[in-house]
Amino acid sequence: MKPLERLAAYNQGKSIDRLPCVPIIGNTAARVTGVKVSELRGNGRLLAAAQIAAYRLFGYDNIRVFTDLYVQAEAMGAKVRCPLDETAYLESPAISDVASIDTIHPIDPRKAGSLPQHLKAMAQVLDAVGSEVPVTGAITAPFTNASFLIGAENLVRLTIRNPDAVHRLCAISLETSLEYADIMIAMGCTPSLTDPMSSSTVISPKKFREFSFPYLKRLIGFIHDRGKSVTLHICGKTHPIWELMADTGADCLSIDNEASLLAAKEKVGRRVRLMGNVPPSEVMLQGAPGDVRAAVRKCVAEAWDSPKGYVVASGCSLATETPFANINAMLGAVRELGYPVAASELDQGSL
Amino acid sequence: MLSSSIELYQQLSDAVLEMEEAQTVILAEDIVKHGLDAFEAIDRGLVQGMMRAGELFEQEEYFIPELLLCSDAMYAGLAILKPHLKTEQMRKKSRVVIGVVEGDTHDIGKNLVKIMLETSGFEVLDLGRDIPPKAFADEAALAGAQVIALSTLMTTTMDGMAEVIRYLTDGKIRDRHQVIVGGGPVSLGFAQRIGANGYAPNASEAVKLTKRLTGDSAICKQIK
Image 1 (tube, rainbow over the protein chains, first blue to last red):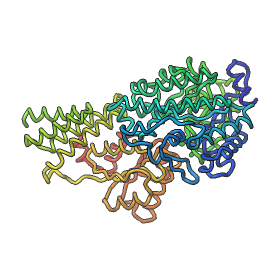
Image 2: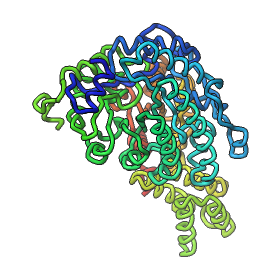
Image 3: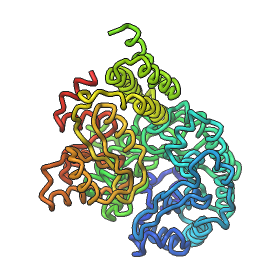
Image 4: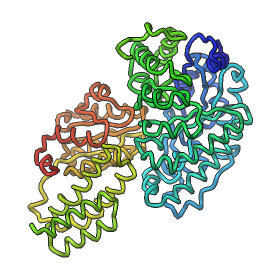
């Protein structure tokens, strides 16, 4: 089955060959086509080619055009460092104090930073394989993007000291996100949201409700109005905010390996689809194929019968150097289990 | 001890816990003005307050924003009280060199560990973020630090941790420092594989680990 067929059948409760499976591939795609990681960011053609080749090589169920979390913030003035062959990282935020907030403005994703090249990549991926696999574009959610605009420590201090400043930064970030999502959807691409700073490892559920939730909800509402479904990924601990995450309207919650898939199923499995949470570092990057198989079986045992459905996935984006053998082992383990998953297939110990 | 001084120390502790930086400064100045013992005020007031904040953090009552504001208050109080410590109170502390490895600029986690280590009585030399392996070794040697604490949030930069240990080993100075590692992608298995002396999943565990590795009973006593 092609991914789109598989997902459509799964959504309708029809027969499928296996559960959907998404090793969240980012810059590992560069290793597939043999280009440098830094070449992908500003070159839509190379980014598309790498993502298409990675999809064809591994055969997973969702392509996400993603290089790093900083592309929107960079377009809005943050400085990003791009090592030749590693993932880009934030060198300095756009501003360092509240007084400078007025200097930041929403930008036009068709023109600013590397966003035009990301959009070009999405268009080319859609053109090549959009008829068989969902193509998504990564959007860094407003609260996290705000942290790149003024610095993470600054932002979290401001959540207590100057809530209004945080809201202003989130609102500016939201505007850029809406614009970016709008263009993506117009070309047939589905936005996918990532929001690491909203994690309960960083801020309290109360602060999540105050500073992340309203903006996520508006962004997701907008995407729904345009006819697309939304996956929301928040890293680290999220158990205190699962209900709120579901309240944002997200259709699928991507759960980090720091959180329990089983507990998530029990708490919100009736409301949203779940995906996760094979450990990206310990298992996918540093483990052997046997470890990957065991981790997949544990995840499937926990969540395959989640009422709104389950997608086998890594708990977060995969590291660039994740061995191909481990990505293949992930898909292989899911194929081996088939669907429906027989309880006898799963290790009793992990149930 | 005067009951009023005990009361002041308690107020100092509360001000830190309540993230009241301005109030902490006023109380610290009061303590200096009244000629009360600066060491006691730090120990029973500021440090005590920060310890309580750390407990709330462990219990998921406080999160990173709260902990950072508590530490702002603690440091503001320390800046006032420290100059009034008597020399015999400036006891020798175990030193820790801490930093985020090269290629990574995420430093909230590292900063929390630093805050909690300082609260627990360690002297912490913070190298900052994006630090090359050689700098860790050189700075630790220079400072006579028992512990080198390495942090990263990125899988791409984990190898930098192994690099620090290789550098120490190649320089035949591996036995002079305990190397501890932490951060999102880091695990106990990884720590063992690269030959680190310890791994901690969060700031409070990092403090316990550091105490264990330095065998600093004086420090253990101070916090109790």
